[in-house]
Length: 211
Image (cartoon, rainbow, N blue to C red; front, side, top):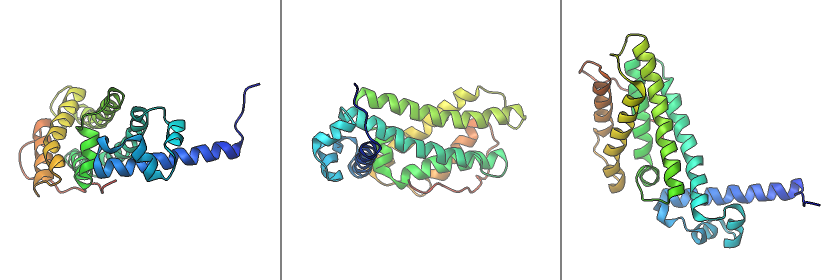
């Protein structure tokens, strides 16, 4: 007869898993992917190394789950920014400002999410991350094209180019841990021009708080 975990045992395992993920998130934000060894995570969580392996068979699986957890928060923030009140011009400024602002608010964590060399399993999660941001922007672009507020274009391609361009522009400042004061406005202005908006003053928009 197969062993069935009691509710108390399952609750204890769930709590331990959550503690492991919290410890790994702290290490990722402080020192990046390379610092997230199983031993380091176990020490930060205050448990034995073997206990980490009971929740995650390998470092790659642990960090892949960590990426999913952190990215879900970031995607939710960008989706909320896409619903920002105002015209399409302001919505684009809100989305790009939130994406870039949150990244610059936690540079070490954002660098790990965007650019740090990682294992193949984690790289696959990174691709999901980029596609999720692309899809949020593509939906707004498609809406703008359908309403005649943007010139005709392939929304998915435009969104992929924006995510790639903005992400690449952030890599250097994230690696250095500092960025020029005008970086976010410049990224917003670039994105508006790329979408086909007339050049001119860039609207102010809220930038997301760091996760």
